[in-house]
Image (cartoon, rainbow, N blue to C red; front, side, top):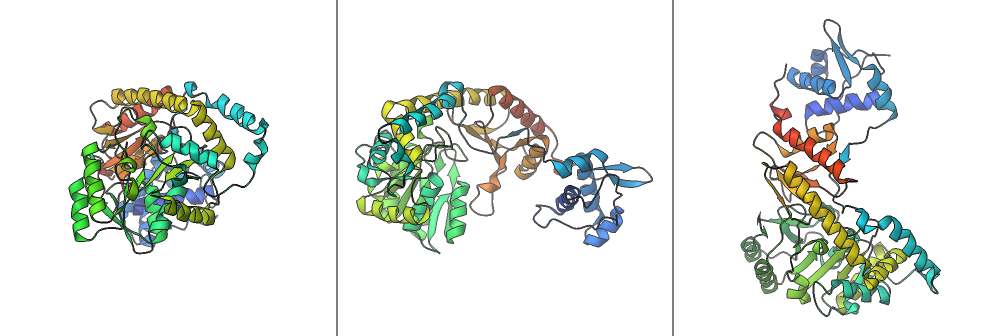
Length: 461
């Protein structure tokens, strides 16, 4: 074979990583084979017009990843076993702690409940109707169930104000489509849900970051933004914020609602974690229901497989507008899973499942607090993620990269940042681990990496 033609993966975060990723890709594609000799480092530096230390760093990284071997006096060669493994398999991460999903404890009994209750629904007198098309608002029975489910957050929400959507992301997009047009501004915490960032990019909205502290969005920061130029909407996750885990106090909610009302700002309240929290704080839906669009998904308190979210609108007219958008985008929520959610709300199963998940999340938080003792992190005692601050020697992006190479995936703050500045922190999700033992292994590995020097401070030799 001809010698390797050096190139860069342009999407890589750093140039030396671009060289490593290009090398890895060529091994996977078979353009490099076991035993192939790589060009000298100086030749690669000249070909790519980078300095020699960048190439040296790339070769060191490639050796750490097991892609190549260096032989004194002979050069650098593709490793024998690496070529075969890279071409035919992608080794999975040991554990993906980047996905923010609820744990599935045995007490939730989903493996039995899901098939048994779906079977019961389909065998009923109107069972096959659950396989038909339905109204974009959701059936009347499903909207009544949604009203019952939201009763913990706000009293007397009429079913006519509630719609059933195919998950929170679909609901959030539809709400933004109702309220906002290209160029409009929407305020959110300086760290916020990546799904909102994706919608803002798609719809060409301007995201306005609001300063936050340990208690969440700072009301004074919102007031200052509104005094200068009020945004069209405020997006907020008031309970167990994603990613910071902060829960807004009642005082802050009242103050923020007052600011929004006085400046004509609509509130979009995304509140998926309420069933996990032991705190009973009135939702914006209760404090300012006439200006609030409230989204309550079941994905975070039951399972992502139950793609159901209830949306409470400020009034019947807004509900009709939202139904039109849902009809044009997702058409309807999945009728069978909507019917399952209605059954579980009616017979109390949903409360039992969310209670079991809350208890399991609490147990996992205790494990995390034990293993990460001595580090700085924020967490809700019943939530299923935590916000881990980096020690001074680590940058969040480097820590996430090193963790992934070691077999555990976490998410750096840059994924949540509204604007160019992001704190040196990562979100660690505790729910995806199949059991507590696997979680202990993953967290122990992360704790060990935190004790190491950053990969960015290693000497280049």
